[in-house]
Image (cartoon, rainbow, N blue to C red; front, top):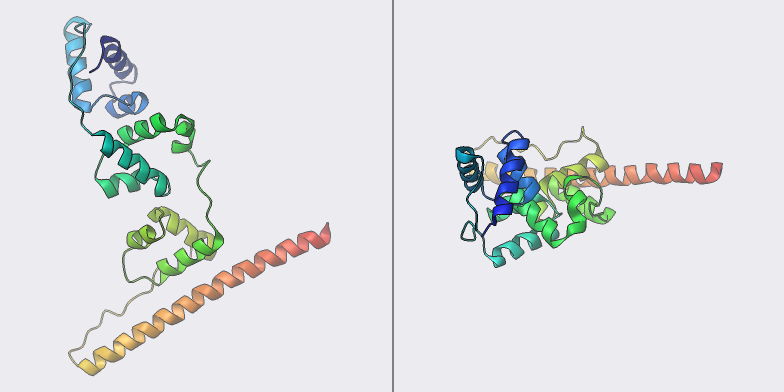
Length: 220
């Protein structure tokens, strides 16, 4: 139930924000879009709302709420990934749940500070998996417990933005079984070569960083 104070606060904020529904719900953490618009219609009739409480049924159970927050925390703290994986709730609702459970995370949600750091070995394994994959980038990201954008960020950090994120597959087909077998073997060899190239590039980058660090030590 929403009290009179809750409802009038939401309506007044809704008006101050230029009747922007999402911005209002994001800031308050409540109500639903339909409820907010309904309260505003009532308010416009007499520039006030009926006293007392407005009864509403819960849209999500406590178990759903806890499951969503847990998924957010264990999957790179990514709002979009949680919404996509679970199919609920809205961005504003999930943000409100996280802020309720972890008040100190209020600024972390919308900024870049506080993002988890990852071991270099995990980044390298993720990049190799991304570039040599035979499945979607999203599937690879889920294997490593991160968001898809995080996986591509690792690739850009370690290999550069110009490096391709996957091998090009030969789409030519043949009816001859022997030719198909040869093409499968060729694809396998190309994947092995590509993985070795990625590992070589990673070692090259690491060697460059070590040289720079050694030069700084020698000059100090």
